[in-house]
Image 1 (cartoon, rainbow, N blue to C red):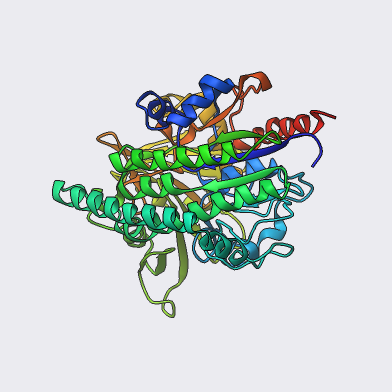
Image 2 (image 1 turned 60 degrees about the horizontal axis):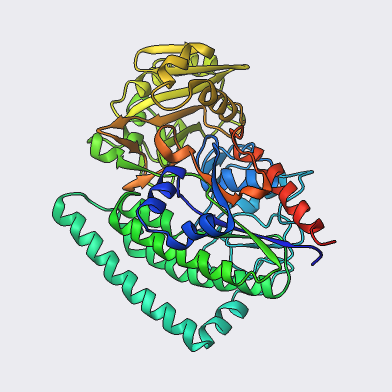
Length: 481
């Protein structure tokens, strides 16, 4: 490794405001010490819409996140549900993406991330499948990382102690929420949070091993805070406790740098408190849609189906949910319907969805024009700006929405959850979420040394962060030559 190497720690789901609050309240003491002793500072940026990990990571790692419209979507050409997490299917469509890109981690290490990103090594730990497979060509099996890690008594003691503490704290937080009438997202509380505790430890071990073996750049994802936020809400005391665990990981990686590596800490998006759509409406979103489309079978992907059976249905609608964002697809169509086509064939559908109490905004595309529906209003182009002002800077947000609306992979209708009593309506069963518009979810950070002169003030999408980090990587490689 010539010059100095670069390690990027990706803290999933931690918004810039939440980071600064944690620093003020003492939840991340080591991270604060980096700012005081090494001149680190918080650089805010806007990740774009959708504020989801696959979209943002593609932008950071490749400089191109086009046609990634959410955490999961329907590929019309291949008639395939594309998703990340458990049972990832992105590999089946990956050949259509990132052609001609220059990955940030080319010949380096990409650990627990959504994409291989040109890395020479992943250590078999990948976010996309959440299991240890070692299937990536050129990468070793994760068991070659896991087993040596477990063989060290200190590591094993740390894992067991932290695991028992996590179980106790999870049960305590879940019970507290149940008693107070605030229902936590049970799936995340029981499975994902605990899983991430183990993945977190192993990922940290893989990062330090990658440094010992001289890989650069190293990009590693840590997801414990995001998972906990989904389970209990991002402002829950237990989520704040998880940040201490994250801070300890930053400390251990930073102290393993010696004089060969520089460190950047960043996040992909923030989180906001949410309320499931099912709590707002007594009728499921898919069931409402099915009621307006007689004869159509409406499938909430990863959820229930409504309407007639497959054999009796005259058509199919697939709904893919990602937090407060939902895409609606007429699944039998090979191409996205224009708004004119949709209203001609299904009059009233878009207006009916926009009028739902839990929906803030519906978006469609008519040729090169954006069409927005809010309540009983149909708006085009800049006419939407006043309605966007409560969510974010309307000029920036309109550009971000228009970009998402230009994707061929976006739904025929794109639906955004409303805000109710300070919480966003979420199309998934989560206490905290992201992926939509409003609040902290689209405002992450980069923590970097002031001396490097990074300027993220004009970054309005994660793909615009890629050249900034690539220049830093290249300048560090030249250092000391």
